[in-house]
Image (spheres, rainbow, N blue to C red):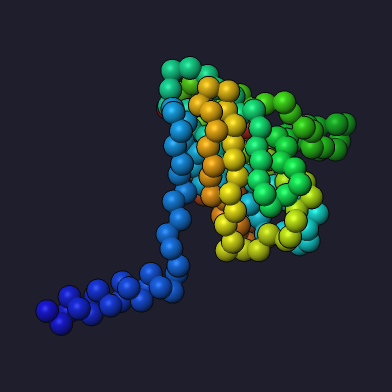
Length: 166
């Protein structure tokens, strides 16, 4: 009995110290948005949000727009090579092929957050609403990670637009 009580108290203490658990996956229709995250920002100019979209359905979808209350605007962006320089460019939509995973990450596709209303601090969470052509709208919770974070484990390297078949 004493060991059970000790284990229970340890679990309660750990939960209190680490705060509430945050689910890293959100599903809408045939899409699963996995591990939405952003880097902590140095100031309140601009930031970016990243995540993977798993389309487990049999028809393609498209990410059409994003919005959040932490910035004046949220735009869909990619990086393109212009001579020897990589430049960000706004895109009208991001294709989400059926049966594939599309990864938004540093150096590739991402949601650009323009006009941050306050700096993003590591450990914070903010809402990001994503609008899809077929699946509709869904709001995800974006976890702000340390400024040195490059990408979650298992993500493709910088500059890659990953499309994995399931």
